[in-house]
Image 1: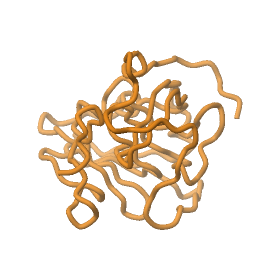
Image 2 (image 1 turned 60 degrees about the horizontal axis):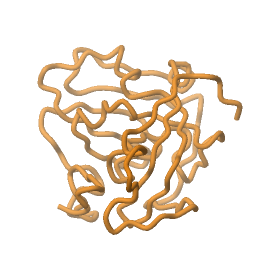
Image 3 (image 1 turned 90 degrees about the horizontal axis):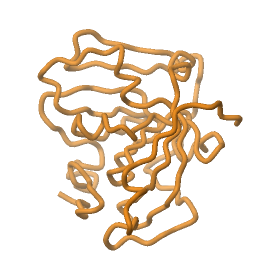
Length: 203
């Protein structure tokens, strides 16, 4: 994949003197972790939707989505299963760019990220709109592998990697925080926020 020149963003955590959070182990591989099968991608019928605490719903086709202005993000990744992968370079569209055509209501404080197969994860609005947060389809100069989230993965570098949801299809803005798939007691009771530096692994 030839990546065009675009704005370069460096995640603040890359500048830490010690870049490995507590009780994490550095890996140079990229483990594949998810529940269930890897979904297939139908470009013609794929769509991205925004709804909830917004003035008006918004949607885009895949071609419309990837035509939005792009960024490259240099960031580290930390998984709740205790591995850390440094110096990832993500290519995609920033969360801030995606939100430009959407007007949030004052009541919007959280976002539920909706993905293929009914997977979800919740985020505070401030974390979702971080400068280094991106909807990515490229990683280290190549298209993402489907097992790693292609055709679209949310990347939120400051939180554990389960918050960087794979196979994203939409955003629901909420007034109050709600547990997503892994945050639910049924599927693991992971922390509602997931800060690796504070070891927010479980609720």
